[in-house]
Image (cartoon, rainbow, N blue to C red; front, side):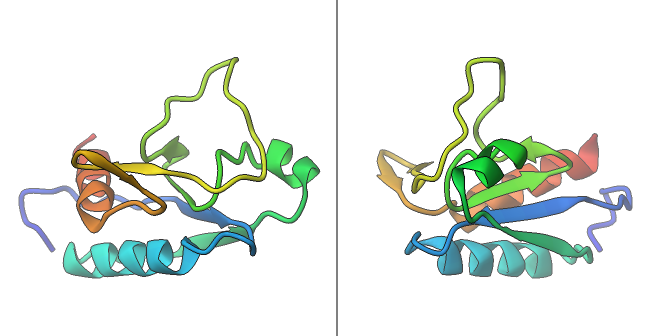
Length: 114
């Protein structure tokens, strides 16, 4: 365990839909990030199967990762749209279809410090 971080139980959700080609690499990046930071917690994997599910789960697109109910990139508000769509993440100057390990690890560390 990183000794400068306090031990904290995290609630992690991984949301996706089957038609998204990037969910497997995103889940792999999440699992590797947890392992590299020596964080031991369960991942709740949620398969979104309909527009109704998208509304129920506040689904921002596939793949999505929430740590302690916070999305990796998007601050939700009343104008947030929930739907069945593939998602894009910032990776330096480009946009890619999955979150990088660096982004995931940054957010994990932020949550551990709070």
